[in-house]
Amino acid sequence: MAPAIHKTRQDVSELFVAHLRAERTVVPEELTAIARRALRENFQKAGMGVSGANFAVAETGTLVLVENEGNIRMCTTVPRLHVALVGIEKLVPRLADLGVFLRLLGRSGTGQKLTTYTSFLTGPRRSGEDGPEELHVVMVDNGRTAALADAKMREMLYCIRCGACLNTCPVYRKIGGHAYGWVYSGPIGALVTPTLVGIRQARELPFASSLCGACRDVCPVRINIPDLLLHLRGQAQTQAPLRAASLLSERHMFRLWAWAMRHPRLYTLGTRLARWGQFLLARRGWIRKIPVYPASQWTLGRDFPALAPQAFRDRWKQLRRE
Image 1 (cartoon, rainbow, N blue to C red):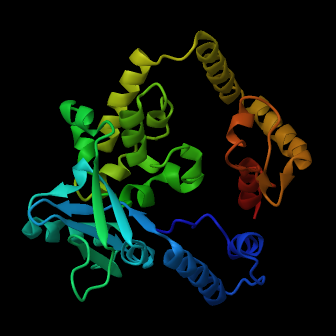
Image 2: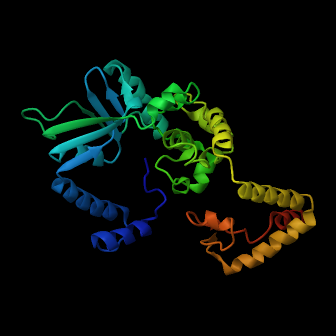
Image 3: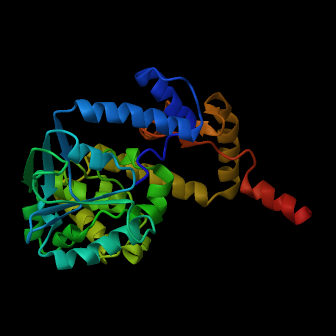
C-alpha cells in the first residue's frame, strides 16, 4: 500500500536514471512504463520467486495474496519455483471464513470493496495451467508462539496488516515509516517489533505514540493498541531501563522545558534566537542536519521542520490589530 509515497516524481526519475539508465522524465505514465519494463525483465529471468501471504487456508492449502500493482502475481507465477513465507498467524480454518477477512482488508486498507488483484494459489501448476513447477510453503514462527503464550500480547496476532492504524496515526503521518527503523512501522509495528525481536532491541518503539486511541478506534479487528503499548512500556522500564546518564539527561531536558514554559518572555526570546540561528541550517523550510546532540539523532533518519518565519504570538497580535 503506497510503498514509495515518500518519494516525489523527481526522486523516482533520478533513481531510474541512475540504476536503469532510463531517460529523465517526470510524467507518471512514462515512469510507470519504465518500471514495468524493468520489472518484467527481471521476473522473466528469475529462477525463483519469493512471496509472503495475506492469508493461508488450512482446509485447502490455498495461499491468498492481495495487491493493487500486479507485481506479486508476476513473482508467484512466472518463475519456475515459488517459495512462500507465511507467518503462522495468517492461517484461517476454512474458505468460508476467508470472505470476512477479504472484505475487512480491502475496505480498511484502501477503501476498496476488493483489491485490484486477489490471487488464490493452491499448489504448483497443473496440466494446461500457468504458474510455477514447484511451490514450497515455509511457516514462520519467529516469536509468534511466545506472543501467543502471553495472555496480554496475543491480541497483537489478530492483525490483518490492513494499514488502517498507519493511516490514522498522527505520529506516523508526521514522521513516516523509515523513522521507526524496522520493517513494521506505525502503531502496529510498535507492538509487533518489540514482541518478535525483544523489548531490549526495540525499547523506544512503544514510546513513539501519543496514546490518542485513534488506532484502536479504526482497527477492523479491534486490537486495543494503546493498552498494549502501555504494557510494553512497563516491560521496557523493568527489562531494559534507561541508563542513568540517559535518564538524567532526559530529566534535565524536561526541567529546562518546564522552566522555559513558566517564563513566557524568556521563552519568546529563545524562539526568536532559534529562528535567527536556523538560517545557517534551514533550506526550503527544512533542516537536513542538526549538529547538536540529542537533536542530531533526529536528523540521522529524518529532516527537521524549520521554525515558521513568524511566531504565533506575533501573528495573533497582528490579527487582533487588523
